[in-house]
Length: 163
Image 1 (cartoon, one colour):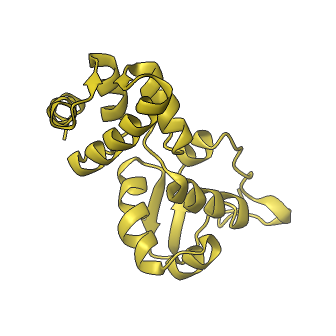
Image 2 (cartoon, one colour):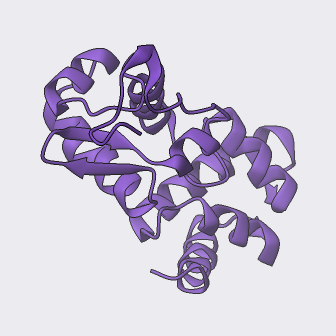
């Protein structure tokens, strides 16, 4: 779904939940919803709970951003599991390639959870690539986590054609 469509879903759900939300608050939630109405509604409920305690129940952009930070959903929509998968891929395996089962063990999740929950979004966002040799981080993944990729040909190894 496009962000504009998700904003409509969020406004409708906010009315049903009897919570006040402005246009910018809905846009903030929509932008972190992975293009999925179900996730948008789940995030709205979490933000509503936060707003009831911290902001008299009304949701604006600042409240939405603060709530989503508490719930560890970043500006791009990545959650704890997504960052754990990327972090393991980058920090433990140098960006890959690494097998799915090995990656799942590294983050303490079931293989199916990584494959069905985290991986599709990471691939769609251009942060992870599936290759015949395993999962590989893209340059965007390194940038998103603020890390520098290792230089090719490290440890004295030459590339296939001496490069």
